[in-house]
Image (cartoon, rainbow, N blue to C red; front, side, top):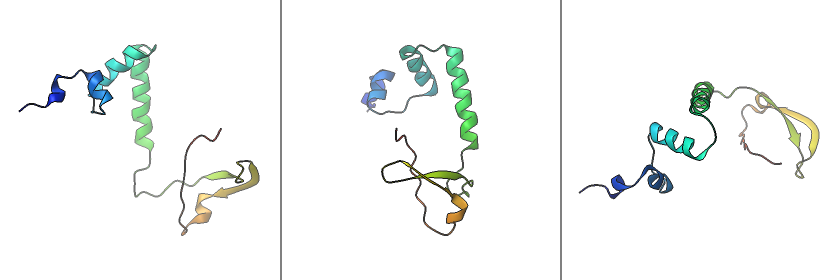
Length: 98
């Protein structure tokens, strides 16, 4: 028995959360955006290069320093360095708070 998703278009499969091939993803992205194929290829190459620099799970996190904020999300005038928290549980939440 064949998978009923085989008869669906790439767009229909994407709407169902199915994995698209890189070629299908590129075709769809170019059809819904105003970037050129060369721009798309450059963006993909930059993403691949960036991904190569991302720390892998289980590796030591790079040290960094952040400005602290109050509960009201205002600058507290203090900074904290990751290495200063060594041995303590640390949760990092990344997002936009603007």
